[in-house]
Length: 160
Image (cartoon, rainbow, N blue to C red; front, side, top):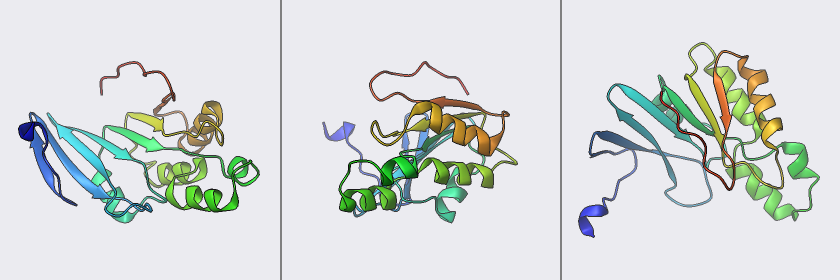
């Protein structure tokens, strides 16, 4: 089993078969939390989630991605006026991207968006797939495919 387990350090790139996987630090309440950039055959997949905001470093690593998995965890009003206790509302708001934050990031890369954007890690209680998609499309326009990943079912397979 040791050959199947390969630790990866912060900002380190490891090779797994044809894939170069780079860990990128995120802003979360867990120490050492990271997300990943995966590259192979001249293509790049950026995974930007489990973070309170997109940092300049994350933006730099994700630049030029062909596909982007982007957190759109919650709609701020739904989170604020829902039935979660205040401490949990504050934790979620600080450690997970809202629809607005996802949209702001996409506006910042609007001049060269990836060909596929998949919204991930949507809250079942504080978001809705149609709302998340609408917020992102509002930020981006209709130039990029936007897919919302479901909570309980796999998405279709995409080639980018």
